[in-house]
Image (cartoon, rainbow, N blue to C red; front, side, top):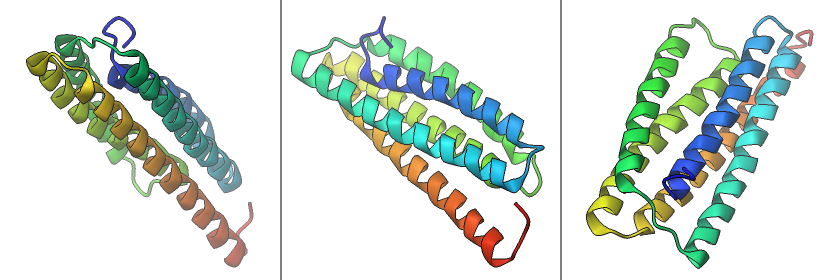
Length: 171
């Protein structure tokens, strides 16, 4: 993202970094209590919201200061990332009865796959038009996708907590 001067690629890179953290937390939570799993999901959702704010700040900075993203690099990186995210979606989809923690990891992967499609289109438009606006638009859209996913994960974790409390399940 930094080499290609692309807000969308930087957003995707930050997202992939946070995904790595979340997948690590998710793996640790697999054999833990439901309370631990909800905590891991809350961390995941919070990271997505923080990530969304960071993307918006970067897109604004690039809007004000200007940028010259490399469309061909955006296209190549989005295709590579799409393959990786498809593999994650496939692996997560094989799990039977996913808990809140695994659903959070799946949300991350689906968000990433959608972002990759946007970056692919933006890269093509940047390359064709020689303008940075498609990169900025997709950077902001990625922030929106991340925020929406983060809110969804936090709601899911909250709902799981209420189910446990009302069903008197041990934490």
